[in-house]
Image (tube, rainbow, N blue to C red; front, side, top):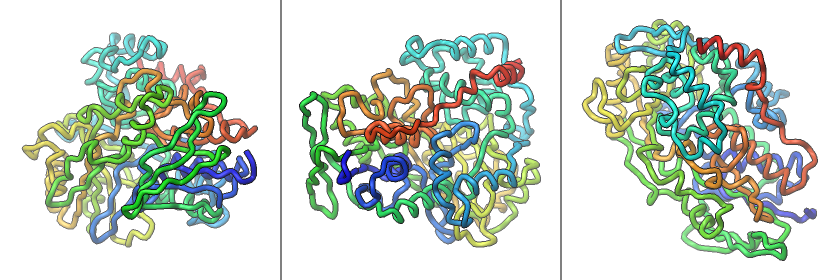
Amino acid sequence: MNSNTKAYLVGAGIGSLSAAAFMIRDGGIPGANITIFETMPLPGGSLDGGGDDRAGYTLRGGRMLTTDNYECTWDLFKSIPSLQHPGQSVFDETIAFNLENIPESKARLIDRNRFKVDVSSMGFSMTDRLELVRLSESDEETLGTSSITDWLSPEFFETKFWFMWATTFAFQPWHSAVEFKRYLHRFMKEFSRIETLAGVKRTVYNQFDSLVRPLLAWLKDKGVVFVMDCTVTDLAMATGADGKWVVTGIECQREGAVEMLPVAPDDLVFFQNGSMTDASSYGAMDRPPAHLTKKDSGGWALWEKLSQGRPEFGNPAAFNSSIPESYWASFTVTLKDPVFFDQMEKFTGNRAGTGGLVTFKDSNWFMSVVLAHQPHFIGQPEGTQVFWGYALHPDRIGDFVAKPMAECSGAEILQELCGHLNFDQSVMASATCIPCRMPYITSMFMPRALADRPLPVPRNSNNLAFVSQFVEIADDVVFTVEYSVRAAQMAVYQLLDVAREVPPVTPHDASLKVKLEALIKAF
């Protein structure tokens, strides 16, 4: 690449932000030569955090982090200065925070009688153990497009292990057996401590404030150009002398006008194909979220257009064709009275920020809540508390509210939660609950063939890379910040011929100690 090389990034999620950072830090591209286009008014993609103490805070999700994995994520954030602690990196402040707030869940599962379930054993039968080993040791070619239910008996999905594993990582029984197997190997170290979530690391605040804000500040300081409220509608493609595809132009729409930006032969284009939070919608205390679908979204159209006649660019239909199999709902609760947190801390035995998920395993909605360390937002006023929850089965009738969660207002969700906890609803007198429906939130878990996801840099591409949850990275797992960051690092290093090695996936599943601990836990 020459000194005039420019880079254009479509989408401002963590994949694109990371790619920009790696280009500057390791690829020698000046920040001013990098432009990021984003449809939304704010960058950050799925790592969002919004609202305020008056209208209520909003979080679509919360990402699990570990320091035993996430090799590329921490490699990046060791270079990004903290906004809150001068002289420290984001990695440094995260490590310090977790040394002060050590997770050890004492109420991981709650049953229908509000008993804290004994999770010292996983509840496996010998059949469960044998089937789990068979699945985990099968190669991906054998697993193919099969689902988890093709390999495990119905009884497995009533084990304490499944209740904990499914809610920690958001798996459904009909999801991909390949992805389930990858998780078993990638997070084998978590198998032996899944009941306490001892390996989970939290950021100081929500992930937007703790990861996206400092990364944005660093990129802007380096001169990176952000073009917000701008939708890229097409990429002009041509074939080079070597027969590979070359992006020659970017068609974008902003303020009602369509324009075509030329892309020189030495320029690079990075595209965030697909979005897990596409077509998300928020409700309120008095209304449920709108039921949006693909026709209301903008995140799939460009990938569908690019992949037509170009099989190495992937197959989005494998992921976005069945909303009932890929959606769930979450909710964010803002409180002005400490009584709910006080009762939860007394009931669970965990101070907020140390307990992780509390799952109501018998709930029809399969609902979980988590009380984060407070404050959870930068600028959150003293006396205001925020917690988050989600349900994997929002299409089912509630236990205390006679309608599906997807049709519930924030007030009705709080009624259902108080029912499971046997709390008087007066504890929610000051609460603002904002529900969120996400039709594609686990679309990356859908059963798929190997060719359905493009490589970060497809073999037939000269200057186009894909950086998202919908690319193919051997041995790593989707639905993690790490996957997007790793895809970005791989793509940047390949296109810019960076000599530095991408941090390899740590093979915890090859460790005899880890295997032994997992075996002991299984028995």
